[in-house]
Image (tube, rainbow, N blue to C red; front, side, top):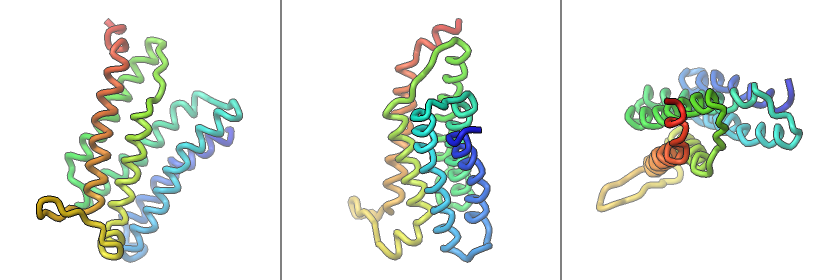
Length: 192
């Protein structure tokens, strides 16, 4: 197994560690959320690293092509579902984000079957970054709200910073999904 694949696999293995610190009282709150946020950031940061190493060393493998996007989806989905369970995120937001991932994955499976290669778009990358930033902001909500006091006041309504970031992530998620489908319509038409 090459270095890039080991890094991808490490991201998958960090998911249970992230969940352990987030969902248990092993360390008292809010420190458990800070530690889980650090683990989440470390795991998320390996995403670009494994791809860079694979391309630079010309070590792109089928395992990496399969596991890299799966590792990303596992990490983000685990975080979203956990945050819903902790009442820190509305379930509809998690459903929209996860549904987009299912739709895009379905498109990719059909494309592979048809021998079509679909490259990642800039909107997909922006979507991923915005989701990661929003999730980290929610994980660090206690610190951000109480220590930094980052709130927005819109028409007399106070809105937390992490809510604004999550709305941005949802908008990029929806837009990138529509963009992905629009640019790859031939995948649906080719499988008649």
